[in-house]
Image (cartoon, rainbow, N blue to C red; front, side, top):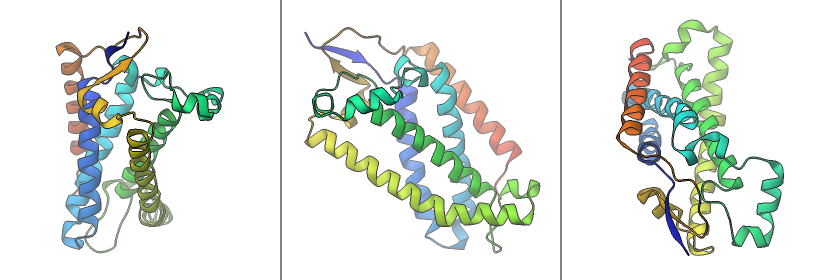
Length: 221
């Protein structure tokens, strides 16, 4: 019997939606010229706030959003890549590829945001963290942000989009629908993620505190 299981809680789903919005905003503003660089920096700071929140939510969040429930063991990855496992996945939350992809995306976005806050374009934008760095460190951060981090993120996002489409049209697993609704179908009884008013208020308080601290101590001007 197929059961509908609450997998993705509301904070996790809002995180994904907000992250898509901010990443799009970052790519748009960086290509609009120098007058948009302050807004670009503020978007980067907002992205860092989201990433820090996701790390916290990976500890305290819903069952399937917690990092401890990610399928990260190499044996799980190898088994999943076999045809029999790949087409008939028993994973309700992130499968092994999805687990590693999520961690890689989180790490890459954190590094991109931090390197941006450490950058100086010598024209209109100077990241707030440059106050604590020497010239060579600022140059390295600026180089990484524009020459390494940006193309890396483009490659990761393109791979992610391809994977979502592949799962939807080839494997008949609609990952977008489950992320929007929060529910997935399962033939077995598995733990559902807690998604009540208390957990949502906890997420809101946590995210609000992170945003306040970042924008207070690291203002982008």
